[in-house]
Image (tube, rainbow, N blue to C red; front, side):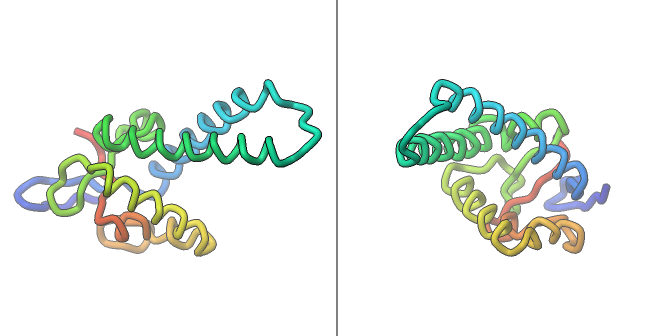
Length: 143
């Protein structure tokens, strides 16, 4: 755990392991929700309807994630359990919806780059992944 003073406030940046655990908890939760929502449709003959339904579920989960970041002080259920949150890198305040969307787009880019975008947490001063730098956010321990 690395601490740094930023604007007169001591900030404890969340490291790779705690972030990865939170991410894993969230993905397990979202996978469970997806399975529950797809359960009524186990035997589609035509793959197109199930593909459309999965796409709708994915969009809903993405929207729910961004909404949680904004409404619940930068935290999804996994982040809440790990006592970390996302904040604006400049103000240390909660993020808005625009920043949430930008951060999620950064998640996609972090993934496309063979997960190197996530590994950046290990090598940056403020433990920022690519999506944090892209959206100008930090993940910090909640106080």
